[in-house]
Amino acid sequence: MSALDLPASASPSPVIRLHADDAVLIARTSLMPGVEVAPGIVTTDRIPAGHKVAIRPIAINEPIIRYGQIIGFATQPIAAGQHIHTHNCGMGDFARDYAFGVDVKPTPNFDLPATFMGIRRDDARVATRNYICILTSVNCSAHVASMVADVFKKNPFTGHNPLADFPNVDGVVALTHKTGCGMTQDEPLTLLRRTLGGYARHVNFSAVVVLGLGCEINQIGGLMQEQKLAGRLREMQIQEIGGTRKTTEAGVAFVREALTDANKVRREEVSASELIVALQCGGSDGYSGISANPALGAASDLLVRHGGTVILSETPETYGAEHLLTRRAVSREVGEKLVGLMRWWEAYCEREGAEMNANPSPGNKAGGLTTILEKSLGAMAKAGSTNLVDVLNYAEAVTKKGFVFMDTPGYDPVAATGQVAGGANLVCFTTGRGSVFGCKPAPSIKLATNTPMFKRMEEDMDINCGTILDGDESVQDCGQRIFELMLKTASGEPTKSESFDFGGAEFAPWVLGATM
Image (cartoon, helix red, strand yellow):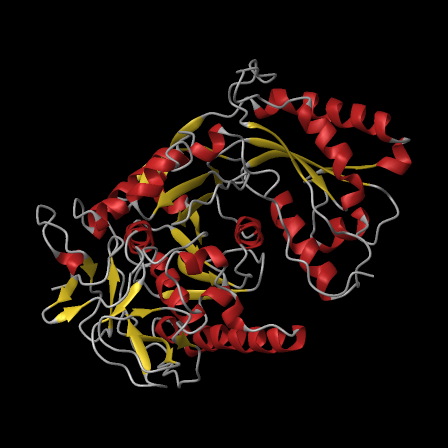
Protein backbone atom coordinates (compact mmCIF):
# COMPACT_ATOMS: atom_id res chain seq x y z
CA MET A 1 0.00 0.00 0.00
CA SER A 2 1.39 3.44 -0.92
CA ALA A 3 1.52 6.22 1.63
CA LEU A 4 -1.15 8.07 -0.34
CA ASP A 5 -3.60 5.19 0.12
CA LEU A 6 -3.36 5.23 3.92
CA PRO A 7 -6.46 6.31 5.85
CA ALA A 8 -6.53 10.03 6.56
CA SER A 9 -6.22 9.34 10.29
CA ALA A 10 -2.94 7.43 9.94
CA SER A 11 0.30 9.14 10.89
CA PRO A 12 2.02 10.17 7.65
CA SER A 13 5.25 8.32 6.83
CA PRO A 14 8.36 10.49 6.28
CA VAL A 15 8.46 9.15 2.70
CA ILE A 16 5.98 8.38 -0.08
CA ARG A 17 6.09 5.34 -2.34
CA LEU A 18 4.02 5.79 -5.48
CA HIS A 19 4.30 2.40 -7.19
CA ALA A 20 5.42 -1.09 -6.21
CA ASP A 21 8.05 -1.11 -8.99
CA ASP A 22 9.61 2.22 -7.99
CA ALA A 23 13.32 2.40 -7.17
CA VAL A 24 12.79 5.67 -5.30
CA LEU A 25 10.84 7.10 -2.39
CA ILE A 26 9.80 10.75 -2.13
CA ALA A 27 10.70 12.69 1.02
CA ARG A 28 7.54 14.07 2.62
CA THR A 29 9.69 16.52 4.60
CA SER A 30 13.41 17.27 4.66
CA LEU A 31 15.27 14.18 5.92
CA MET A 32 18.67 14.18 7.61
CA PRO A 33 21.21 11.33 7.22
CA GLY A 34 20.41 8.30 9.34
CA VAL A 35 16.61 8.28 8.89
CA GLU A 36 15.14 4.84 8.22
CA VAL A 37 12.90 5.17 5.15
CA ALA A 38 12.22 1.46 4.62
CA PRO A 39 13.13 -1.71 6.53
CA GLY A 40 16.93 -1.78 6.58
CA ILE A 41 17.23 1.33 4.33
CA VAL A 42 18.72 4.42 6.00
CA THR A 43 19.40 7.78 4.36
CA THR A 44 23.08 8.41 3.73
CA ASP A 45 22.59 12.02 2.58
CA ARG A 46 20.32 14.91 3.43
CA ILE A 47 17.17 14.50 1.30
CA PRO A 48 15.36 17.83 0.72
CA ALA A 49 11.56 17.83 0.92
CA GLY A 50 10.04 16.57 -2.33
CA HIS A 51 13.29 14.94 -3.48
CA LYS A 52 14.06 11.27 -4.17
CA VAL A 53 15.93 8.70 -2.12
CA ALA A 54 17.04 5.33 -3.55
CA ILE A 55 15.33 2.32 -2.04
CA ARG A 56 17.78 -0.16 -3.58
CA PRO A 57 21.17 -0.10 -5.32
CA ILE A 58 21.03 1.19 -8.92
CA ALA A 59 23.86 0.41 -11.35
CA ILE A 60 25.29 2.96 -13.76
CA ASN A 61 23.10 3.33 -16.90
CA GLU A 62 20.26 1.43 -15.19
CA PRO A 63 16.78 2.99 -15.56
CA ILE A 64 15.47 4.86 -12.52
CA ILE A 65 11.80 4.14 -11.90
CA ARG A 66 9.15 6.47 -10.39
CA TYR A 67 5.39 6.16 -10.97
CA GLY A 68 6.27 2.70 -12.30
CA GLN A 69 7.87 4.47 -15.31
CA ILE A 70 11.37 5.51 -16.41
CA ILE A 71 12.31 9.01 -15.25
CA GLY A 72 15.99 8.80 -16.19
CA PHE A 73 19.14 6.70 -16.01
CA ALA A 74 21.84 6.45 -13.36
CA THR A 75 24.93 8.40 -14.43
CA GLN A 76 26.94 6.80 -11.62
CA PRO A 77 26.38 3.89 -9.23
CA ILE A 78 23.74 4.75 -6.62
CA ALA A 79 23.53 3.04 -3.22
CA ALA A 80 20.34 2.45 -1.27
CA GLY A 81 19.63 5.48 0.92
CA GLN A 82 21.36 7.96 -1.41
CA HIS A 83 19.85 11.18 -2.72
CA ILE A 84 18.86 10.90 -6.41
CA HIS A 85 18.91 14.11 -8.40
CA THR A 86 20.71 15.85 -11.26
CA HIS A 87 24.15 14.81 -9.96
CA ASN A 88 23.48 11.10 -10.56
CA CYS A 89 20.38 10.88 -12.80
CA GLY A 90 20.27 11.90 -16.47
CA MET A 91 18.35 11.41 -19.69
CA GLY A 92 18.65 8.43 -22.01
CA ASP A 93 16.90 6.80 -24.94
CA PHE A 94 14.32 4.10 -24.39
CA ALA A 95 11.57 2.54 -26.48
CA ARG A 96 7.97 3.64 -25.90
CA ASP A 97 5.12 1.23 -26.54
CA TYR A 98 2.46 3.50 -28.00
CA ALA A 99 -0.15 0.69 -28.09
CA PHE A 100 -2.71 2.98 -29.72
CA GLY A 101 -6.12 2.74 -28.10
CA VAL A 102 -5.58 -0.39 -25.99
CA ASP A 103 -6.79 1.34 -22.81
CA VAL A 104 -9.85 3.01 -24.35
CA LYS A 105 -12.97 2.31 -22.33
CA PRO A 106 -16.46 3.75 -22.12
CA THR A 107 -16.74 6.82 -19.91
CA PRO A 108 -19.74 6.48 -17.60
CA ASN A 109 -21.79 9.67 -17.64
CA PHE A 110 -24.04 11.06 -14.93
CA ASP A 111 -27.74 10.93 -15.69
CA LEU A 112 -28.22 14.28 -13.95
CA PRO A 113 -25.23 16.47 -14.81
CA ALA A 114 -24.05 19.11 -12.37
CA THR A 115 -24.95 22.71 -13.10
CA PHE A 116 -23.58 26.21 -12.64
CA MET A 117 -24.88 29.74 -13.15
CA GLY A 118 -23.57 30.75 -16.56
CA ILE A 119 -24.18 33.50 -19.10
CA ARG A 120 -26.03 32.22 -22.18
CA ARG A 121 -25.03 34.20 -25.29
CA ASP A 122 -27.28 34.79 -28.31
CA ASP A 123 -25.46 32.03 -30.20
CA ALA A 124 -26.24 29.57 -27.34
CA ARG A 125 -22.64 29.39 -26.09
CA VAL A 126 -22.13 29.80 -22.34
CA ALA A 127 -19.76 32.28 -20.71
CA THR A 128 -18.29 32.22 -17.21
CA ARG A 129 -17.29 35.91 -17.26
CA ASN A 130 -18.43 39.06 -19.08
CA TYR A 131 -15.60 41.30 -20.28
CA ILE A 132 -15.11 43.98 -22.93
CA CYS A 133 -11.84 43.54 -24.83
CA ILE A 134 -9.33 45.90 -26.45
CA LEU A 135 -7.42 43.51 -28.73
CA THR A 136 -4.20 44.61 -30.46
CA SER A 137 -2.96 43.61 -33.89
CA VAL A 138 0.62 44.69 -33.16
CA ASN A 139 2.85 45.78 -30.28
CA CYS A 140 2.85 49.31 -31.70
CA SER A 141 -0.76 49.77 -30.57
CA ALA A 142 -0.22 48.25 -27.12
CA HIS A 143 0.16 51.48 -25.14
CA VAL A 144 -2.92 53.10 -26.63
CA ALA A 145 -4.95 49.96 -25.92
CA SER A 146 -3.78 50.06 -22.30
CA MET A 147 -4.70 53.74 -22.03
CA VAL A 148 -8.26 52.90 -23.09
CA ALA A 149 -8.59 50.01 -20.64
CA ASP A 150 -7.05 51.99 -17.77
CA VAL A 151 -9.94 54.47 -17.88
CA PHE A 152 -12.20 51.64 -16.68
CA LYS A 153 -9.78 49.83 -14.41
CA LYS A 154 -10.82 48.76 -10.92
CA ASN A 155 -8.33 49.26 -8.10
CA PRO A 156 -8.25 46.08 -5.95
CA PHE A 157 -6.55 47.93 -3.09
CA THR A 158 -8.58 51.17 -2.84
CA GLY A 159 -11.88 49.75 -4.03
CA HIS A 160 -12.28 52.46 -6.71
CA ASN A 161 -14.52 51.04 -9.43
CA PRO A 162 -15.35 53.03 -12.59
CA LEU A 163 -17.75 50.20 -13.54
CA ALA A 164 -19.85 50.44 -10.40
CA ASP A 165 -22.92 51.30 -12.47
CA PHE A 166 -22.40 48.16 -14.58
CA PRO A 167 -22.36 45.31 -12.04
CA ASN A 168 -22.77 42.58 -14.66
CA VAL A 169 -19.57 43.59 -16.48
CA ASP A 170 -16.42 41.98 -15.06
CA GLY A 171 -14.05 44.50 -16.58
CA VAL A 172 -12.39 46.04 -19.60
CA VAL A 173 -9.14 44.33 -20.57
CA ALA A 174 -6.39 45.32 -23.02
CA LEU A 175 -4.68 42.26 -24.51
CA THR A 176 -1.30 43.43 -25.77
CA HIS A 177 1.66 41.46 -27.11
CA LYS A 178 5.17 41.88 -28.49
CA THR A 179 4.68 40.90 -32.11
CA GLY A 180 2.50 41.62 -35.16
CA CYS A 181 5.25 43.06 -37.34
CA GLY A 182 8.86 42.28 -38.25
CA MET A 183 7.75 38.70 -38.85
CA THR A 184 7.49 36.28 -41.75
CA GLN A 185 4.11 36.02 -43.44
CA ASP A 186 3.64 32.27 -43.25
CA GLU A 187 3.33 30.06 -40.16
CA PRO A 188 4.19 32.79 -37.59
CA LEU A 189 1.53 35.17 -38.95
CA THR A 190 -1.02 32.37 -39.30
CA LEU A 191 -0.42 31.33 -35.70
CA LEU A 192 -0.80 34.88 -34.39
CA ARG A 193 -4.00 35.44 -36.35
CA ARG A 194 -5.47 32.15 -35.18
CA THR A 195 -4.76 33.18 -31.59
CA LEU A 196 -6.24 36.67 -32.02
CA GLY A 197 -9.24 35.20 -33.82
CA GLY A 198 -9.87 32.80 -30.96
CA TYR A 199 -9.87 35.66 -28.48
CA ALA A 200 -12.04 37.85 -30.70
CA ARG A 201 -14.65 35.07 -30.73
CA HIS A 202 -14.26 34.11 -27.08
CA VAL A 203 -17.57 33.60 -25.32
CA ASN A 204 -16.41 35.56 -22.25
CA PHE A 205 -16.22 38.78 -24.30
CA SER A 206 -19.45 40.67 -24.89
CA ALA A 207 -17.73 43.25 -27.15
CA VAL A 208 -14.32 43.49 -28.84
CA VAL A 209 -12.44 46.25 -30.61
CA VAL A 210 -9.16 45.43 -32.38
CA LEU A 211 -6.69 48.28 -32.30
CA GLY A 212 -3.85 48.56 -34.83
CA LEU A 213 -1.22 51.08 -35.85
CA GLY A 214 -1.91 50.90 -39.58
CA CYS A 215 1.33 49.90 -41.30
CA GLU A 216 2.03 46.56 -39.57
CA ILE A 217 2.41 43.18 -41.28
CA ASN A 218 -0.60 41.87 -39.36
CA GLN A 219 -3.06 44.08 -41.17
CA ILE A 220 -6.46 44.15 -39.49
CA GLY A 221 -8.17 43.58 -42.84
CA GLY A 222 -6.20 40.39 -43.37
CA LEU A 223 -6.92 39.25 -39.81
CA MET A 224 -10.64 39.90 -40.24
CA GLN A 225 -10.79 38.05 -43.57
CA GLU A 226 -8.63 35.08 -42.56
CA GLN A 227 -10.45 34.56 -39.26
CA LYS A 228 -13.92 35.42 -40.61
CA LEU A 229 -14.44 38.14 -38.02
CA ALA A 230 -16.59 40.54 -40.04
CA GLY A 231 -19.47 41.72 -37.89
CA ARG A 232 -17.95 40.33 -34.68
CA LEU A 233 -15.76 43.26 -33.69
CA ARG A 234 -14.94 46.93 -34.24
CA GLU A 235 -11.62 47.95 -35.81
CA MET A 236 -9.57 51.11 -35.23
CA GLN A 237 -6.21 52.22 -36.63
CA ILE A 238 -4.11 54.87 -34.92
CA GLN A 239 -2.65 56.33 -38.12
CA GLU A 240 -6.06 56.58 -39.74
CA ILE A 241 -7.84 58.12 -36.73
CA GLY A 242 -5.09 60.67 -36.17
CA GLY A 243 -2.80 59.67 -33.32
CA THR A 244 -2.72 58.66 -29.69
CA ARG A 245 -5.19 61.08 -28.11
CA LYS A 246 -7.86 60.78 -30.79
CA THR A 247 -7.62 56.98 -30.87
CA THR A 248 -7.79 56.75 -27.09
CA GLU A 249 -10.91 58.92 -27.12
CA ALA A 250 -12.46 56.75 -29.84
CA GLY A 251 -11.64 53.60 -27.88
CA VAL A 252 -13.12 54.98 -24.68
CA ALA A 253 -16.25 56.00 -26.59
CA PHE A 254 -16.55 52.46 -27.97
CA VAL A 255 -16.34 50.97 -24.48
CA ARG A 256 -18.90 53.42 -23.06
CA GLU A 257 -21.22 52.52 -25.92
CA ALA A 258 -20.75 48.78 -25.33
CA LEU A 259 -21.19 48.86 -21.54
CA THR A 260 -24.96 49.29 -21.53
CA ASP A 261 -25.59 46.24 -23.69
CA ALA A 262 -22.91 44.22 -21.89
CA ASN A 263 -24.58 44.94 -18.56
CA LYS A 264 -27.88 43.43 -19.73
CA VAL A 265 -26.63 39.85 -19.32
CA ARG A 266 -28.09 37.64 -16.60
CA ARG A 267 -26.82 34.35 -15.24
CA GLU A 268 -28.96 31.23 -15.54
CA GLU A 269 -28.61 27.61 -14.54
CA VAL A 270 -26.73 25.64 -17.20
CA SER A 271 -25.15 22.20 -17.49
CA ALA A 272 -21.55 21.59 -16.44
CA SER A 273 -21.12 20.22 -19.98
CA GLU A 274 -20.70 23.86 -21.05
CA LEU A 275 -17.36 24.09 -19.24
CA ILE A 276 -14.10 23.90 -21.17
CA VAL A 277 -11.28 23.83 -18.62
CA ALA A 278 -7.63 24.54 -19.44
CA LEU A 279 -5.30 22.38 -17.32
CA GLN A 280 -2.06 24.11 -16.39
CA CYS A 281 0.89 23.60 -14.06
CA GLY A 282 3.70 26.01 -13.32
CA GLY A 283 6.41 26.35 -10.72
CA SER A 284 6.14 22.56 -10.30
CA ASP A 285 7.89 20.61 -7.57
CA GLY A 286 8.42 17.02 -6.50
CA TYR A 287 4.93 16.93 -5.00
CA SER A 288 3.07 18.15 -8.12
CA GLY A 289 2.66 14.63 -9.49
CA ILE A 290 1.59 13.32 -6.07
CA SER A 291 -1.00 15.81 -4.81
CA ALA A 292 -2.33 18.68 -6.94
CA ASN A 293 -1.96 17.12 -10.39
CA PRO A 294 -3.67 13.80 -9.53
CA ALA A 295 -6.37 15.69 -7.61
CA LEU A 296 -6.97 17.91 -10.64
CA GLY A 297 -7.06 14.70 -12.69
CA ALA A 298 -9.83 13.39 -10.44
CA ALA A 299 -11.73 16.66 -10.95
CA SER A 300 -11.13 16.39 -14.71
CA ASP A 301 -12.65 12.90 -14.72
CA LEU A 302 -15.70 14.25 -12.86
CA LEU A 303 -16.14 17.09 -15.35
CA VAL A 304 -15.85 14.75 -18.35
CA ARG A 305 -18.39 12.41 -16.76
CA HIS A 306 -20.70 15.43 -16.45
CA GLY A 307 -20.27 16.07 -20.18
CA GLY A 308 -17.61 18.78 -20.01
CA THR A 309 -14.21 19.22 -21.63
CA VAL A 310 -10.63 19.46 -20.34
CA ILE A 311 -7.57 20.58 -22.32
CA LEU A 312 -4.12 19.22 -21.50
CA SER A 313 -1.26 21.10 -23.16
CA GLU A 314 2.45 21.90 -22.77
CA THR A 315 3.79 19.36 -25.26
CA PRO A 316 7.41 19.47 -24.00
CA GLU A 317 6.03 18.64 -20.53
CA THR A 318 4.30 15.55 -21.90
CA TYR A 319 7.45 14.30 -23.61
CA GLY A 320 8.42 10.88 -22.32
CA ALA A 321 4.89 10.20 -21.07
CA GLU A 322 3.07 10.42 -24.39
CA HIS A 323 2.93 6.63 -24.68
CA LEU A 324 0.55 6.58 -21.72
CA LEU A 325 -1.80 8.95 -23.54
CA THR A 326 -1.69 7.16 -26.91
CA ARG A 327 -3.02 4.08 -25.16
CA ARG A 328 -6.14 6.13 -24.34
CA ALA A 329 -6.54 7.61 -27.84
CA VAL A 330 -9.96 6.90 -29.36
CA SER A 331 -8.35 6.21 -32.74
CA ARG A 332 -4.93 5.48 -34.15
CA GLU A 333 -5.14 8.79 -36.04
CA VAL A 334 -5.54 10.74 -32.79
CA GLY A 335 -2.67 8.84 -31.15
CA GLU A 336 -0.33 9.27 -34.11
CA LYS A 337 -1.01 13.00 -34.20
CA LEU A 338 0.27 13.23 -30.62
CA VAL A 339 3.39 11.23 -31.51
CA GLY A 340 3.89 13.51 -34.51
CA LEU A 341 3.92 16.53 -32.21
CA MET A 342 6.73 14.93 -30.17
CA ARG A 343 8.79 14.38 -33.32
CA TRP A 344 8.20 18.04 -34.32
CA TRP A 345 9.44 19.21 -30.93
CA GLU A 346 12.54 17.03 -31.16
CA ALA A 347 13.35 18.55 -34.56
CA TYR A 348 12.51 22.05 -33.29
CA CYS A 349 14.91 21.69 -30.35
CA GLU A 350 17.65 20.34 -32.61
CA ARG A 351 17.17 23.24 -35.03
CA GLU A 352 17.29 25.79 -32.20
CA GLY A 353 20.28 24.19 -30.47
CA ALA A 354 18.20 23.25 -27.43
CA GLU A 355 17.25 19.96 -25.78
CA MET A 356 13.99 18.69 -24.37
CA ASN A 357 15.57 18.10 -20.97
CA ALA A 358 16.28 21.83 -20.67
CA ASN A 359 12.60 22.25 -19.74
CA PRO A 360 12.73 21.72 -15.95
CA SER A 361 13.45 25.19 -14.58
CA PRO A 362 15.86 25.93 -11.71
CA GLY A 363 12.81 26.18 -9.45
CA ASN A 364 11.51 22.80 -10.65
CA LYS A 365 14.87 21.22 -9.85
CA ALA A 366 15.09 22.87 -6.46
CA GLY A 367 11.65 21.38 -5.77
CA GLY A 368 12.83 17.86 -6.56
CA LEU A 369 12.21 17.36 -10.30
CA THR A 370 15.27 15.98 -12.06
CA THR A 371 14.42 15.31 -15.74
CA ILE A 372 11.71 16.26 -18.22
CA LEU A 373 10.60 12.60 -18.10
CA GLU A 374 9.85 12.90 -14.39
CA LYS A 375 8.14 16.25 -14.87
CA SER A 376 6.00 14.93 -17.74
CA LEU A 377 4.80 11.87 -15.85
CA GLY A 378 3.59 14.07 -13.04
CA ALA A 379 2.15 16.75 -15.32
CA MET A 380 -0.03 14.40 -17.36
CA ALA A 381 -1.88 13.36 -14.19
CA LYS A 382 -3.89 16.60 -14.52
CA ALA A 383 -5.88 15.02 -17.36
CA GLY A 384 -7.25 12.15 -15.28
CA SER A 385 -8.04 8.79 -16.83
CA THR A 386 -10.66 9.28 -19.56
CA ASN A 387 -10.18 8.71 -23.30
CA LEU A 388 -8.13 11.10 -25.45
CA VAL A 389 -10.71 12.25 -28.00
CA ASP A 390 -8.78 14.84 -30.03
CA VAL A 391 -5.35 16.43 -30.61
CA LEU A 392 -5.25 20.07 -31.71
CA ASN A 393 -2.68 22.52 -32.98
CA TYR A 394 -1.96 25.68 -31.01
CA ALA A 395 -5.04 27.93 -30.55
CA GLU A 396 -7.30 25.70 -32.66
CA ALA A 397 -10.94 25.71 -31.62
CA VAL A 398 -12.00 22.89 -29.30
CA THR A 399 -14.98 21.16 -30.90
CA LYS A 400 -15.22 17.83 -29.06
CA LYS A 401 -16.37 17.00 -25.55
CA GLY A 402 -14.08 15.07 -23.20
CA PHE A 403 -10.30 15.06 -22.81
CA VAL A 404 -8.42 16.83 -25.62
CA PHE A 405 -4.74 17.68 -26.07
CA MET A 406 -3.48 20.97 -27.55
CA ASP A 407 0.07 21.52 -28.79
CA THR A 408 1.71 24.37 -26.88
CA PRO A 409 5.10 25.21 -25.40
CA GLY A 410 5.65 24.46 -21.73
CA TYR A 411 5.89 28.15 -20.81
CA ASP A 412 2.68 28.77 -18.85
CA PRO A 413 1.48 32.14 -20.25
CA VAL A 414 2.01 31.00 -23.84
CA ALA A 415 0.35 27.64 -23.19
CA ALA A 416 -2.68 29.11 -21.43
CA THR A 417 -3.07 31.76 -24.14
CA GLY A 418 -3.41 28.99 -26.72
CA GLN A 419 -5.92 27.08 -24.59
CA VAL A 420 -8.10 30.14 -24.03
CA ALA A 421 -7.90 31.00 -27.74
CA GLY A 422 -9.21 27.48 -28.33
CA GLY A 423 -12.26 28.22 -26.19
CA ALA A 424 -11.36 27.47 -22.56
CA ASN A 425 -13.71 29.41 -20.28
CA LEU A 426 -11.97 28.34 -17.05
CA VAL A 427 -8.33 27.61 -16.09
CA CYS A 428 -7.10 25.30 -13.30
CA PHE A 429 -3.43 25.91 -12.49
CA THR A 430 -1.39 23.70 -10.14
CA THR A 431 1.82 24.98 -8.57
CA GLY A 432 4.36 23.75 -6.05
CA ARG A 433 6.78 26.65 -5.89
CA GLY A 434 4.04 29.30 -5.93
CA SER A 435 3.17 30.75 -9.36
CA VAL A 436 0.98 33.86 -9.48
CA PHE A 437 -1.08 33.89 -12.64
CA GLY A 438 -4.31 34.89 -14.35
CA CYS A 439 -5.59 34.53 -17.91
CA LYS A 440 -8.40 36.92 -18.81
CA PRO A 441 -11.07 36.48 -19.90
CA ALA A 442 -11.04 32.99 -18.29
CA PRO A 443 -10.88 32.89 -14.46
CA SER A 444 -7.88 30.98 -13.10
CA ILE A 445 -8.09 28.67 -10.05
CA LYS A 446 -4.75 28.16 -8.28
CA LEU A 447 -4.03 24.77 -6.67
CA ALA A 448 -1.14 24.45 -4.20
CA THR A 449 0.73 21.13 -4.04
CA ASN A 450 1.92 21.49 -0.44
CA THR A 451 0.71 23.04 2.78
CA PRO A 452 3.80 25.18 3.66
CA MET A 453 3.61 27.03 0.35
CA PHE A 454 -0.19 27.35 0.60
CA LYS A 455 0.13 28.98 4.02
CA ARG A 456 2.95 31.24 2.82
CA MET A 457 0.99 32.39 -0.26
CA GLU A 458 -2.59 31.93 0.90
CA GLU A 459 -3.70 35.23 -0.69
CA ASP A 460 -2.81 33.77 -4.11
CA MET A 461 -3.85 30.12 -3.70
CA ASP A 462 -7.48 28.94 -4.02
CA ILE A 463 -7.12 25.33 -2.84
CA ASN A 464 -4.55 23.51 -0.73
CA CYS A 465 -3.88 20.04 -2.16
CA GLY A 466 -1.13 19.55 0.41
CA THR A 467 -3.83 17.94 2.54
CA ILE A 468 -3.12 14.78 0.54
CA LEU A 469 0.52 14.78 1.63
CA ASP A 470 -0.49 15.61 5.20
CA GLY A 471 -2.67 12.49 5.34
CA ASP A 472 -5.85 14.54 5.86
CA GLU A 473 -7.55 13.88 2.52
CA SER A 474 -7.59 11.42 -0.36
CA VAL A 475 -6.87 12.35 -3.97
CA GLN A 476 -10.52 11.70 -4.85
CA ASP A 477 -11.85 13.87 -2.02
CA CYS A 478 -9.55 16.72 -3.00
CA GLY A 479 -10.64 16.28 -6.63
CA GLN A 480 -14.27 16.63 -5.52
CA ARG A 481 -13.39 19.93 -3.79
CA ILE A 482 -11.71 21.18 -6.97
CA PHE A 483 -14.71 20.21 -9.08
CA GLU A 484 -17.08 22.03 -6.74
CA LEU A 485 -14.87 25.14 -6.89
CA MET A 486 -14.91 24.93 -10.69
CA LEU A 487 -18.71 25.22 -10.59
CA LYS A 488 -18.67 28.08 -8.06
CA THR A 489 -16.01 29.96 -10.04
CA ALA A 490 -17.87 29.44 -13.32
CA SER A 491 -20.94 30.85 -11.55
CA GLY A 492 -19.13 34.10 -10.83
CA GLU A 493 -17.30 33.56 -7.54
CA PRO A 494 -13.98 35.44 -7.96
CA THR A 495 -10.67 33.59 -7.72
CA LYS A 496 -7.66 34.80 -5.77
CA SER A 497 -5.90 35.90 -8.97
CA GLU A 498 -8.97 37.90 -9.98
CA SER A 499 -8.87 39.73 -6.65
CA PHE A 500 -5.47 41.10 -7.76
CA ASP A 501 -6.70 41.76 -11.33
CA PHE A 502 -4.31 39.27 -12.91
CA GLY A 503 -4.87 38.14 -16.48
CA GLY A 504 -4.22 40.96 -18.95
CA ALA A 505 -0.42 41.14 -18.93
CA GLU A 506 -0.23 37.32 -19.13
CA PHE A 507 -1.63 37.29 -22.69
CA ALA A 508 1.29 35.78 -24.65
CA PRO A 509 0.77 34.37 -28.16
CA TRP A 510 3.36 31.79 -29.24
CA VAL A 511 6.03 33.49 -31.36
CA LEU A 512 7.53 31.32 -34.07
CA GLY A 513 10.08 32.17 -36.73
CA ALA A 514 12.58 34.96 -37.20
CA THR A 515 12.12 38.53 -36.03
CA MET A 516 13.12 40.60 -39.02
